[in-house]
Length: 351
Ligand SMILES: [Fe+2]
Image (cartoon, rainbow, N blue to C red; front, top):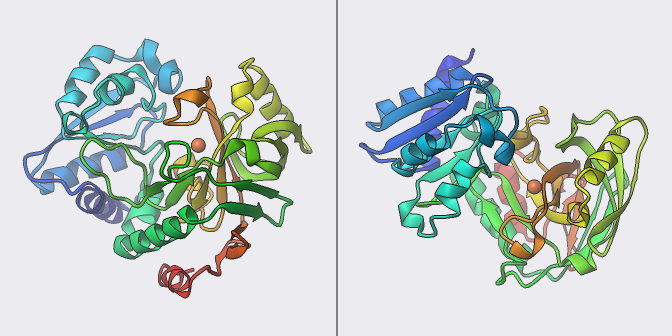
């Protein structure tokens, strides 16, 4: 299905995101639950570009991250991937945060000695076409970098949503690890690990985060697409109450409790979601980019050793409104400021 468009999107990803050169070794990992049209299209595109693609297909592991370890040929994968220039993961049960990943990306601190990496869980034809093939990368990058600039400059933020979200916080110093903004603009440098473009993520100053988050659409793990909204009351950065109709809220509450760790209740980060064509599909890589949503993470805080937790979950507040020091940037998912330039770039991206 969509063979030509998929091949074109994969070719564009290699050229515009990874800037591959002829002769580079590209390892593509996948499992028996992966979409093989996407895997094959990436290998074909790599070949067309003069690279050396290697497709490694494995039985689908029993879980993702470290839970995949017992089923992985760890030493063999590490040896192969370490010697590649680029590693593209299409595994359904992802190797990101597994021992394979940490032996390559955490143990090796010199980026020059690591491959580039991306983890595209459950990528199918539609996801590649909507999130890579159709995207105007230069305009999206300009938009995201300008939004990141105005966000870094802001001290106090507030987010609301039609479903009932109303939460505010102070930003930490953006020049510190605690306040660092990660901009997913589709540019992956040497030794870097990044996902699809269309997101800017950061952690709030946890102590100052108070209010209500109403999670809609998706909450992964443990649920995926939601039947009912999940209302979270947040005090000083931590979830203190979980409410909602149906079974979803109860399931999330039980899942958090199963770790017996207060760290799982921390609101770890938020992100702007700005994928111009991203849709809510139940595939978290794409869901996290549905335009105008804010995406909220719970539990482990990436890159902050002080805030490690046993797991991590992500959920959405659709059609968010957001204010930076009182100046509105989003109004129910529509970019309305804070500068005319940012509004015009959003228009150029179809919003
Ligand atoms: Fe997250």
